[in-house]
Image (cartoon, rainbow, N blue to C red; front, side):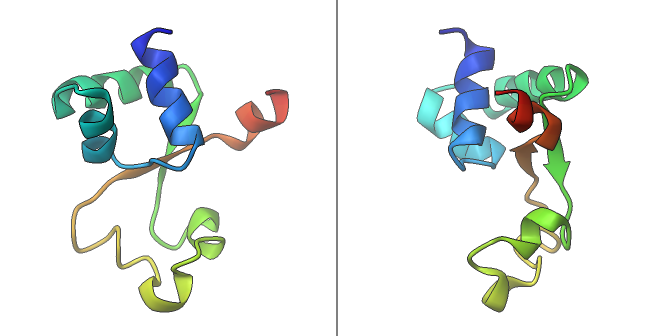
Length: 87
């Protein structure tokens, strides 16, 4: 399995932050960032915006309200909906 697939599999399993992906795969954060940019350009993933539909279904919604993304500067990603439907 290539790095693109490994990153995509992690995002699909719920690991959505670059630092955590880098840690789990033993890669530099910059490399993960580049891989995610490729996956974004190919239409496989998208950034999660605070207050988005993803936040609405988050199990931490009652205590977070999107604050986990905004002030910390953390960027999270998810599989695009049209990609999930094809899979």
